Structures are given as C-alpha cells and as structure tokens.
Image (spheres, rainbow, N blue to C red):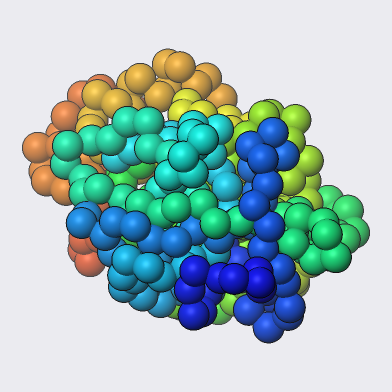
Length: 344
C-alpha cells in the first residue's frame, strides 16, 4: 500500500466483494477532490465510533471497528427518508467522511434522523490504485453479454424503506422452493448492503444478484447511468436457468433510487406485484403518484393487525393480508399459483 501507512492492516467492506482487492496488490494515493467520482474505492481511517461501530465484510458478517482502523469502501450517495442522507460530494477539504451504510458506502452526512445513531466517522486517507490508475467499482467488472430478461418476476415494492419488503420476499421465496421452483433473487435499487441479498439466498434462492454486482454503491445516480447498469444487471439475472425471479425495489419507487425506472424495465416480465406498506394511507399515495403500479397483494407493516387490514379494505380493492401469518399461507400459495405461468 502507501509508503507510510497510518495503519497496520486494511478492513475490506462488503462493497469490495466484487473486486478481489483483498487478495491482489494495490497502492493508495491521496487525490484532489476534483478527481473523485461515485464508485471510487477509497480508504478511510476510523476517527469516531460513538454511534454505530460495525462494518459489513465481503462475507456479509458484521465486524466491530475501532478508532485507528483503516476501512476500504466506495464513494457514493444515500437518500434514506427514515434514517440519513449524505453524499461523497459533501466531503469537505478536511477529508472527514462517514460510513453511510455498514457496507462501506462513504460520503458525508447531510441530514440524520434523531432516531438513529451517529454513523462511523473516518478520515480520508487515499484512493485505491493499480499502476497509477484509480480502481473503481466499474473498472473491476467483467464484461456482460447482453441478454433479454424474460423470467416470470414477482416484484416487491414498498411505500417507504423498512416497510417489510425483504421479509415478504423471504417468505415468498420459501413458498416457491416448496413448489420445487428454481428461484433467482435480486435487489435492483437501494443503497449497498449485502445482508438483504444474502437473506433471500438463505431463504432458498438458487442465485442472487444486486446493483453492486454491476458496479453501483447505491442507485442514487443519474438516470442514464442507472439504465446502463440495470441492463447489465438484468443480463446477469437472465443467465441462470431460473423458473421465477424474486425482485426487490429498495425504498419506494418515488424516492431518488431510480426505482421507477426498474419497475418500468421489468414490466414485460412481471407476473405479480407485492406492495409492502408502512401505513394504509400510504398505499393510496403510491397508487395515485405511480400509475403503472397495480399490486396483486398488499402486505407489510400496514397488515400487522386486523385493524390495518380492515382499513386497507376500505381504501383499496386490492387483496391485503399479512403473509407472515401462517394461517394465510394457503391463500398466498393460491395467489402464486394463479399468477405464475410456470405453475399452470
């Protein structure tokens, strides 16, 4: 690494899992801010762990870090409506930055909910380089042969973050595996965390992909850049011989993660849409603001009680029930069999 490192070793965050940087040589060079871009791999030295202390490793395991530890992550942007927002563009001349997610999404916090802890603070130490060229998430990727994506897709959309999408996707994946189907799981928008993708695979998905696999630390990027990455991601998802795809849109399609573009791109493959709602009234807002969204099922936090389900019945004509309720499993199975052509 650099000639005079400030640390004994480097901790690799899960955003480096596509890079092999943990097994191949690299150097570190401090670059001027004018030469920074989203997706650049950089190293920061931890300066404050008074709030969050964990970094997600390439294995998906969380590791507690301490002041003085060096962590490799990638520059990016997060716009989480319920937790915090921040961007690599907000990192000032003093080099202070934060881990905006445990996965090593590095930027500087611009706003934070009082309900969440302070993120890990780091001091920028340098850009990762090979042969004088900076290493980026895009530069480490192999080429992808374009393929049409036509796998029957169950799409999970939320009215907000933390509405129950990943939980619902896990339950549906387990039901599909009981039906002896081959499942490809994917998270196509959001901010980088390996945990969500691994949880779908733990539920039985035979293959798993997310936007990190195509070089994005988060999908808060210009629309044209996201469309290019999404085409690559869908080509990857089309490679395995899957019978059905379980696909999650991070946050809600109305938030700045380009979820609306993903929904549009998946329309031809769409077999079923599951809307996970944090509040019954939020369903009306999403349906009104996002016309093409016609959920086949409403579930999530809003269906945790009979009162929530009753209110949804008053507000919408869509089926609504809590798929975490074991008594609803036969109803869920019937809906899956009705919507999936592979089960005809």
